[in-house]
Length: 123
Picture (cartoon, rainbow, N blue to C red):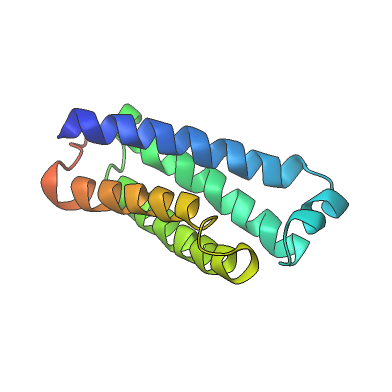
C-alpha cells in the first residue's frame, strides 16, 4: 500500500506543482481569459497547489513532520472540489471529470497516509 501511495503522491505532486507554477507565471490577461475567477484568486490557488504538491512528497522524503502529508492531500482535495464545481458551472460535466479524478486521488492519499500507511517520522 505504501508503494502505491508513493506513486500517486509523486504523480499528484508533479501535476499540482506544474499547474501552480503555470498559474503564477502566466500573464494576467491570459489567465483571465481561461477562467471567470479573479486573477488574484487564481494566483492564490496556484500558490496553494505548489505548497500542497510539495507537502505531498517532502515530509516523507525528509522524514520531518510526516503528519503534514495527509493534511496537504486533504487541502488539495478541497481545491479539487472547487475545481469540479467551477468546471460544471462553466464547461459542463464532461470537463469536470479531470478535477474529479484528481481530487479522488488526493483523497485516496489523505486517507491512506492518515489511516492505512502513515509515514514514519525520523526518531
